[in-house]
Length: 125
Image (cartoon, rainbow, N blue to C red; front, side, top):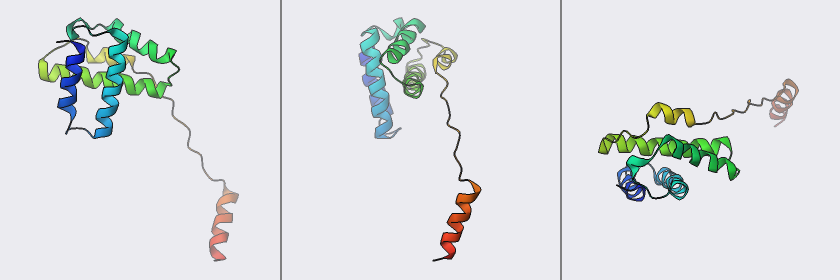
């Protein structure tokens, strides 16, 4: 089965399971993968193909968060291939390694003076 055919089947499989927005995101990322690696047989996909895809995303200026979404989409796709077609192409652990760490922002808090001013403003009402 070719990559494009597998993506179409994945679309049918995910519709109704995931939200329309999630399916749309998965398909967008998988079609980017298709453009990068070509319409080869899914059995011929390699870890190097996924690395090439990941590198192409960074070359286009994508952030770590965007790349993480793309790799997660690929992960779900390979999970589908394994569950439905019993195709063990790339181990899940290897795909997890490819997912970049996403930096988390430190939460910002109101300082004591600002809180006191807000409370005082409420008392004046």
